[in-house]
Length: 345
Image 1 (cartoon, rainbow, N blue to C red):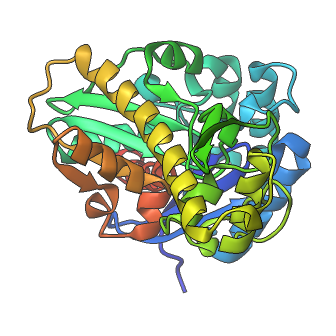
Image 2: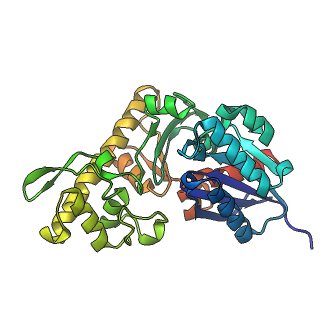
Image 3: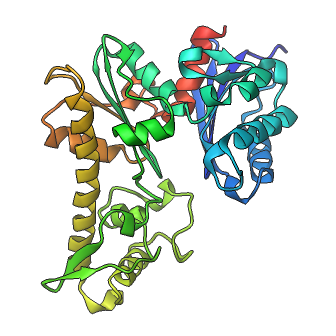
């Protein structure tokens, strides 16, 4: 029996491996996210790649690959990280069927990508933004993942890029280091209200953004593969205790309602940082007031809230991907699989 040709989109991050599969007709069939603690060493990636292949069982596949994992501190330099990741990929996937996504430069072979590492390092955002722009004429694509937020305006189906590298994008406000799960609360605010007082926070990783959004009902335990700050579960009681530690106290020092209000404080601060970055991007564009925000990532509920504040329409990325919730949560992998089917068939 002949195996159907498929297209696998791989997004290799520093904390997770995401992979999506499209069939030859451009229909997404599966989207996975697996833990991949790449900062512990390249063996973590090898294990996750093998695990993904055992689940997907796609021997006749074209592999489209992007990465952000070169940034982890296991590598002395990003060029070293790109090479190590590609070497690892070469031991697991058939090299002749691997295509490395290089944004404006198209698709590269593994050897080409090693020599042109700057063209492939941390370009996953371009895949999902380009896919969104192929479906909608103008708008602002915003992907809020576990760790970061990408804000990419586009007009007439062309990306309005203020920079390509992470450094340039952080400087220009199109990359914001704030996410729905892994962001330490001390990176969101330096104080919070409790019992009518403004309390300065402990400068320790006692709690993260996932604690806030779990308490506010925007994240479920099943949405999170990362360990919490104290390695305890993502239940509301543990989230409250971790939040209390940030204010140098315990959860029983205030009511559940009061801790909800503290969570709202941090939520407002985080939303404010994303809205500020959106306004910075809008200030450099000529997008009309009707141009929508397109939300992707596990934290796209924040994008929907930002659209309301900015008085703009909201479109969920899943509407562009056969209404797939997993595709919306892991947009670069899904977009890569679909772009590969369109461009590499």
